[in-house]
Image (tube, rainbow, N blue to C red; front, side, top):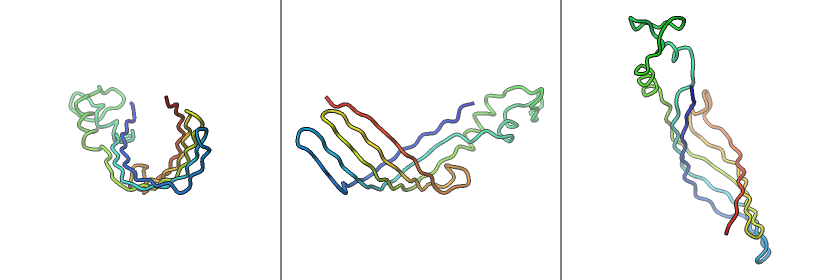
Length: 131
C-alpha cells in the first residue's frame, strides 16, 4: 500500500535582513506566515485491512479472504484525512553568481495530519541555478 498526501502552502514573507556584494553575492534572512491545506490517505491499520479483505459473504477474513477493490475505494473515500491550518516560517537565501541556496524551517498548525498532534515542523533545503 502507498501512503499518499498532498499539501498546499500559501505564504507571505518579508525580508528581515539583507546583505550583498554587488554582482557577486547576496544573502537574505526572511520570515513569513500563511495558510495551508492537506489531504492524505488514512494510515494502514487492522480496521482498514478488515474493510476490504473479505470472504464470499462480505465478512472480514484476513486469512482466506479476497481483495475487494470497491470496498477499499469506499474505505479510502470515507476515511481520507483533510485539514486546513496556518504556518509560520523563517529562512535564509544565499546567492553566489547564478547559484541559489535556500534553507527554511516551517512550523505547520493543522490538527491530525500527524496522528495525535496539532502541528509539526519541517526543514527544507533547496539548490538552484539561474540562467
